[in-house]
Amino acid sequence: MRLQSIVDGLYPSTPGSIPFWIDTLCIPLTAPGQYLAFEALYNVYRRADETVVLDESVYNTPRRSAEQNLIKIRDSQWAQRLWTIREGAIAKSLKVKFKDCSLDMLDINSEFSTAISGHLMSWAAEDWKMSENMMDQKSVNDFIDQLQLLERDLRAASGRTPPPPMKLSYRDLGDTARIKREIQIRAVLRQCYISIPLYRFLVTDFEETKFLRLRSRVDSIYKGLTYDVLLNQQREIPTETLQRLELLRLWD
Image (cartoon, rainbow, N blue to C red; front, side, top):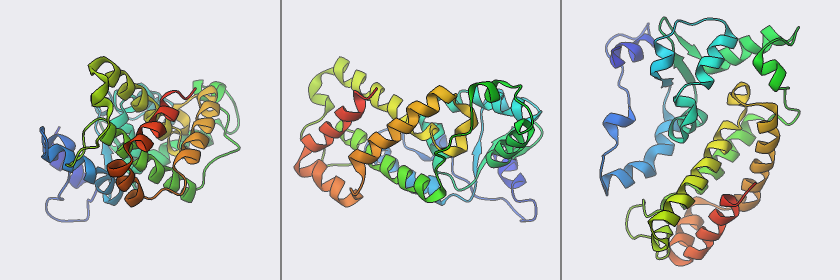
């Protein structure tokens, strides 16, 4: 599989090679460059014209029915990782690369929704009913902006931000406690990102009910907080950052 040919295939009417960004080539492996790259990721994802899912188990499989395609995506490593599920949530347009084509995630959802509208006979139809609390696009964008603040809190508490570092952080807890807290917050973050409508057929009805409560908790903590105010708090009042993360870490 050649990355350039996949990218060029998204723009068949455009001559020449289309520039692209990929994390494995564009993010430094060590600090401080790595931390500076982390600060820019949100804008990279949001401003990209197209975002393409490249998961080995998916791109080695020809496209099938919408249901089978969703099952393949749901079971992929891409759907299990915070890093990748986040970039898809932020993307303007999300394409999934199968062996014989690239499919738009919205089109897959639409095709599947149409297929089950007249009968309930699939894993998703049995486990999922359309939420009556679907988010409109503005609500999705506002929620993702709040998650950007949450991620910045986590990076600051973990000591993964450009200098100066936060005066009080998870580093002061010892390795075991630090790792445990980071894992717990990352799990919450992944639940937040996968709760948006784009991924509605990748979660069960039970998970959706849980995610609605989680979105409410995130909103209660970060609503009205701007990025500049957050950065100032991390410098001057680090306990505010840790308190916000503790409220989410212990969420159930």
